[in-house]
Image (tube, rainbow, N blue to C red; front, side, top):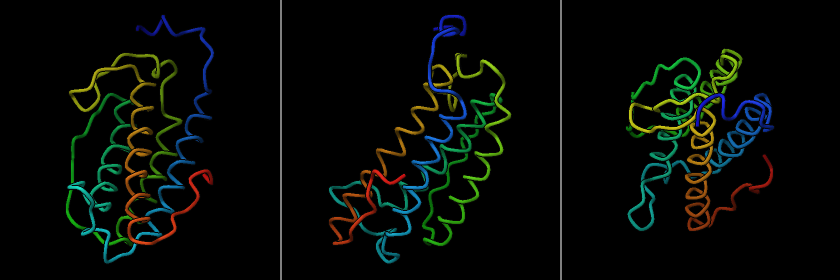
Length: 160
């Protein structure tokens, strides 16, 4: 689909999309806070990655992904090493500030342009952003399962 094909169609306003994403990010942050420190980088079920590793993946997608959508610069700087909860929360908060700063730099019409995210995933700008949000929701869901298995009550999913 080209830029012209979606112009004129109604959809979610750009600022509302960021607000929606940041609501998900606030909920994910509360989930990170609720996770027991001693289980963050060790607990898994059925061969899934630890929640600490999943948080690192979310961090490696959010800001680098938005930078790619905004200006076409796709970083694949993937870091997966055990980090403390405090370190992950600090990185999460910094990423939130960066998303807020990057968002207004998005050129008009950019969400309707075709692009290849991270050098391998073709799609339209808004599709890429929706994937970044979906990826976070998916991994947060795994975190919910982990917390329940650990006997920890997770934050209500509807309080974003």
